[in-house]
Every structure is written in structure tokens, then in C-alpha cells.
Length: 361
Ligand code: SF4
Image 1 (cartoon, rainbow, N blue to C red):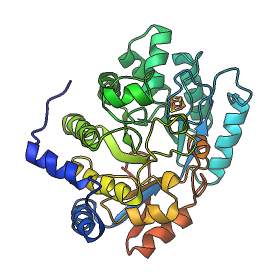
Image 2: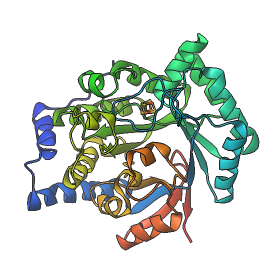
Image 3: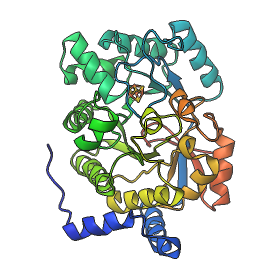
């Protein structure tokens, strides 16, 4: 699949142990301090974020992952698909609020071929050419290319030409086929996810990488996942950031059916962030805290575990909302700036791929 970076089994054992529940209390301090020191060495004291707007264009989804409380069958009374007018209304509100990015996320609609996604891009780019578009998922793009009878590289070329700037690294969940068989058997396999993001990057579409942890995976699988991301990044340099996302169990079908864990605890979250920094170092320098999953207070604390980005203001996130987002799904630049300054660090707004930065008043 890709050339392996040399990782000694001793290193792997230490990293796995770092994630282990047995590290408790003061034993956690050296891990966090090392990760925070590395963060300071690699990216300095800026904490970045983006003024963005999530547009969840449909919740109709054929994939129906076991962890997801958002996706619906087409005949569900709560199923929806936004029309052009509704999408533009949401976009207009966000632009008036200073949004620099639209994030297009949603379910995998059974009728969505490549033309559907091209239409969404064209609609937004025709009206807001200055706003970047971070959109879709590897599963969506693969399914759409299949439905349209084109190969994935061609699909990405078309999406790029229509205005897709960056690709969210969602659908990664845990990159082991064992866990995926339990939590998302209909989604892309590990090999397909790797192939899809690498194809996007070859076409010139950079994107994020994610991990969702705390459900059915083992500690070794978390490390294996981060290592896959590290290997790809070493080869392509096409990831803009790594986003650990803690599993929100409360409304998830696999938890309600007794198939998953309760989700990670706070110290497990901190260990995951810290180990991510130790493994990714400057190969993938931006590690994002998902405030929408953790709430503002714990997101702030997580910034001392090796992380340097707070993600987006969102202006709504129906996937997280359906999972029980603790502090809502809409943040402001001022909230982020207060959290960051209180840590003695420097808040700074960024664009989608971390190439432009803007000072906060
Ligand atoms: S996570 Fe995404 S692909 Fe999976 S069921 Fe939810 S909306 Fe569908």
C-alpha cells in the first residue's frame, strides 16, 4: 500500500503503553510535558482556527454507520436534503459573519452521483468565489465516481475544477478492517480510504486526516491508525492537519445496542493527543482539538497536550449535534481567542490549508 517508515517494535510498545489506562495521575505529566515541548519546538505558540460554516446538505445516508446518530433512511420522517435556496441562505449568513470556508458534509445520498457534488460546488463558487470549499468524504467521492462510471482520479479532477479546495479526511474512523467491520461495514475499507486520499493528493487536493477512537478499537489499533497517517504524510505531504475525534457514545446505535465502549475518558483523550504529537512530530505539524466533541473547557486543556489548532467556528454541525455536542455547535472567534490567550498563547485565524494567517483584534 505504501512504503513503511521504520518504527521499532520498542517504540511501538512505548507508544502503546503511553495510551494505556495504567498511566495515571502524576505519571501522565511527563508525557504531556514532552508533547507540549515538541509542539512548542515545531509550531511555536500560535493556536490557529478558521472562521468556517458547516453546510450539512442532507442527512439521507445509505451507509448507516453503527456509531452515527445523524444519518437517516430516505423514508424517515426526519430525512432532508437542502435545496439550492436553503444552501445559499446558509452560505450568505456565514459570509456576512466573515466565513472563509464552507465545509460541505452530509450523508451518502443514494442518488448522489458526481454531477450532484459538482452542482453544489458550482452553486457556491459562482456566488462566493473568495470562500474556500472543504468538502465531501472519501466514501462519498468513491460512491459518486462509481455511480457516474468514472475513475476516482477523474472524479477528483472534475471536483477540483469545479472548486473543491480541500478534502476532509473523514470516513477514516479507525483504519483497521477488524474495527471497521463492527462500526462501519459499508464504508470504504482501509485500502480504499488510503487509495482515495492519496489519489486526491496526487490531483492536488490536500486534506485533513482524522481518527475516531473510544468505541471498539484496541490501543494497538489507535497506534496503527496514527502510523498509517504518518506513513502517508511522509510519502505525500498532502495532509493539512490531524484531527483526533473522541467517540460520542450517548446516542450512537452501537452503544445503545451494547456493542461499544462508553467512549474515552478525559485522560485517554489527553494521551491520544500527546501520542499523536510524539508520532507525527513535524511530519504532520498541525494537530487539531475537536472542541465540538469535547466542549470549550476541555478543548482548552487539550491545547497543553501537544495540539495547536482549534478547528472551525462551524456555525452548526448536525452530525455532532445529533451525537450530543456538549457546548453546542457554533463558536465565535472571540471565544477561541479568550481560551488561547488564557493559556499564554497567541490566537490566530487561518485559511483552510494553513497558508494564510490573520491577526485577531
Ligand atoms: S457517519 Fe456519515 S456515512 Fe456514516 S451513517 Fe453517518 S452520515 Fe452516513
